[in-house]
Image 1 (cartoon, rainbow, N blue to C red):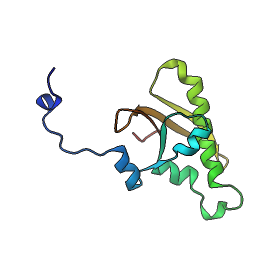
Image 2: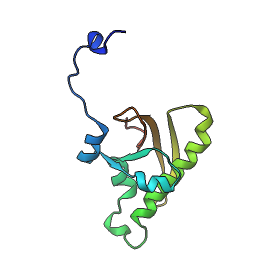
Image 3: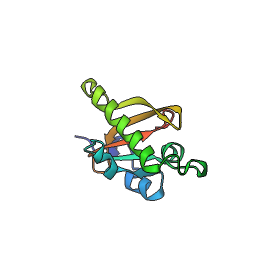
Length: 126
């Protein structure tokens, strides 16, 4: 078997999932996600967190950040269960956030140690 560096050369740069969490590019929501039925580590992109979970000042008292996070995760869990038979590593799903219909993308792939991890992002993110 040929070493991958023989084919592609030395790695120029790498950026781990752990670094992305530490930098705030990803937000780890694994503990709450377990309550929604997920078995693997799960993160939201900072864009999803800022736009659909984090409360803007005018919404305090009317909605809660934990409630919004639960909605994002519960609907992702429901969509994942419905799509489980398809064997795909990516799906989109819809939910309502502050009376607005939102589409998000769920991607499952390898983590830093090749373990399955899930990332929820906006459809245009990858």
